Length: 270
Image (cartoon, rainbow, N blue to C red; front, side, top):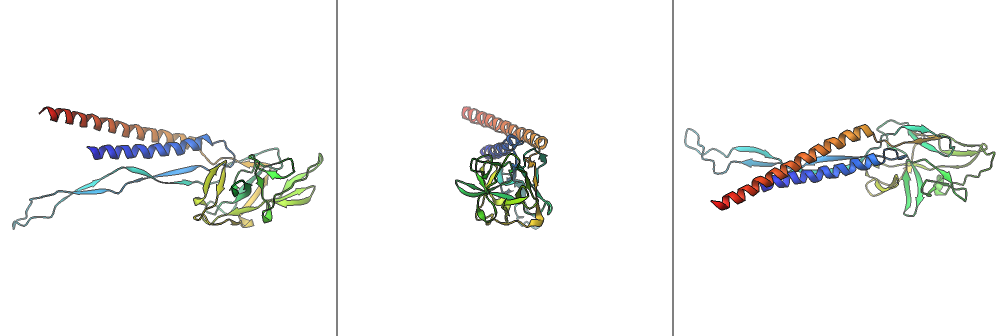
């Protein structure tokens, strides 16, 4: 009976964690450059049960080996939470400094990222909603400077009649004169990148260091933004499924608790 309580409770915890992941995805369904997470649920190792003190014998009177009763599930857990890097839809805008990264090498190729300078060092993003700060530097919505080739900030001079264009390789032209080129990088294992927030990614030992992306594997589209890759309809369906599973395990805990309470009270009266 106690084992049943632990099994149901562990399943409740796993589905509660999954619900948190789905809720975060839905909350960022309209966030530019956001990458949704997928939670993978895994069962704890099965416990194999056998009949003890089995007295079954064959025709010669030899005691037969204990028979297996079967496997006993001991609960669920979240095995890992991974980030989905499938492309989001692209929305055209009226700002020449808005940039959308398009991965052109196929869905199985490593995704490309913009490099930005943050207080915690260089980090990476797919959010291309850029603008100019007071010093003319190209910055993100959070005010982080966008890095160019060589790791230097990009200064975009502006005048009332300036024409700003962005080439497919990330080169920024002002009146047909190149003023900089955004740094585009990729990783050997992007699925291991940390997510510190604000649609940013940070490298770690498992992701490996950033390397320059192959120019044939991406295209920078100006006057456009890549939206979140979260599918709200699918996420809502997953949320309902998770809620039902949580409620089912909750009823199992309540039922087992009632049965255990009756057993303790009734046995005590005998």
